[in-house]
Image 1 (cartoon, rainbow, N blue to C red):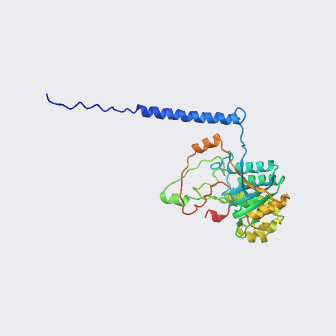
Image 2 (cartoon, rainbow, N blue to C red):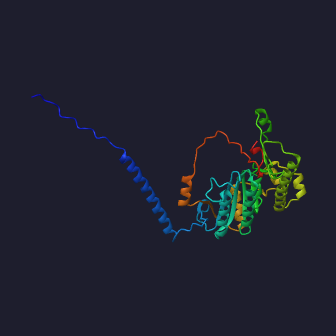
Image 3 (cartoon, rainbow, N blue to C red):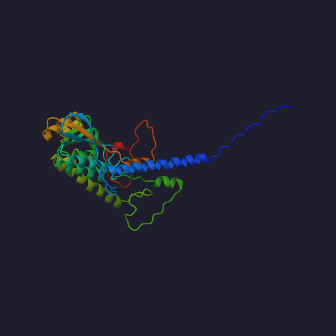
Length: 342
């Protein structure tokens, strides 16, 4: 009898069903975990969620001064181009709302004896700058506010700074740039070269103001310039009032859009003192009448709303070898120095 090898066992064919099943189970498990975290957060909050509530208490982070002191000095950072855009800020009102929330929390905290507004901004949108200035003025009615300008506190950044009780700059700070700018492009020459025509239908003479497909006429230039000068008058008036300077002398001198060093700004009466952040802490203690203080800054607390918002945003990582120039948006007024976008 011939020996024959035993038959090979058939290799079972794996079906993709178990993979789909695992993915579905994992997805619902993840949803269940999120739901339980949400209910846990509600329980800690002491009741059902309030979906109309906007303001959340910010977390304090001590980082300087006497950590054992009872009195506190709150440091609030104004960094970058001042904008009303929401992206990148946890507040629903963007930069303006987030900084205003910090000012409000510092004002409402009885242990906070003074506020330092640490500025590193070239300015930005007119309305956003004005809103921040008003928030600083409101805060100083309750507690001393010291503005400390670092590398740059120009145009809209300076606009906000003058709302403080005391303004400090380093001798190398770039400041000043008191002025207003609006910019648009004219593409008419390029369109003529490539044979493109634009047809605009409008309800009124100025409805297509700043239309980039044609040159502005004299009436339009006068209208825009009048708007620019109206905003400029307010800017100069605020600086003159806050710094106790004569308006006409300011217009004829430093308020022509020029940038200044901190040393030049001190000589012109635009700042009160040359110094650094440590000097701002000492000045805040003097103005509030305290000997020592814990210096704090605010951080946004963890919340499911912020987590979902972060997960929902599309984020890309870019590596830039040099800072990109800021692009003015047509039709918007800015408190910005020209060097930033040229």
